[in-house]
Length: 116
Image 1: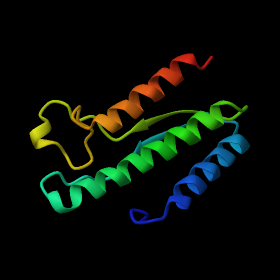
Image 2 (image 1 turned 120 degrees about the horizontal axis):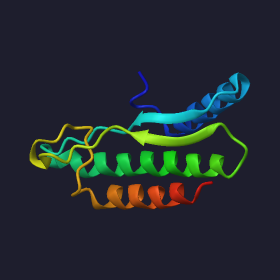
Image 3 (image 1 turned 135 degrees about the vertical axis):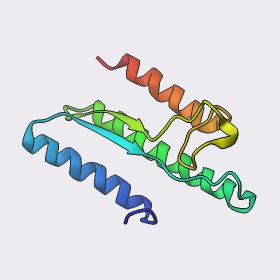
């Protein structure tokens, strides 16, 4: 279980998988990353969102940095859109009301569009 691991774990995990993909000469996509936000618990929701924003920022930064090199890391895919009914969103779901996360996603999409 790595749910409570420190930030360094995420960066080390990505680096280890990039190294493995290089050895195997296979492309790599960081998939199903994210954190839980319990919107029904106001006492922890803000802290949960801060953690989620930190994880997204770290993953996107790593992906963009690796894309600037000759790396097998080719992109990322978070877990998960939950836009059908935000009031009943899964605790891992990204809803449009999550403005900071939506901004990060939009910025990352814009970056990815520029990648050749």
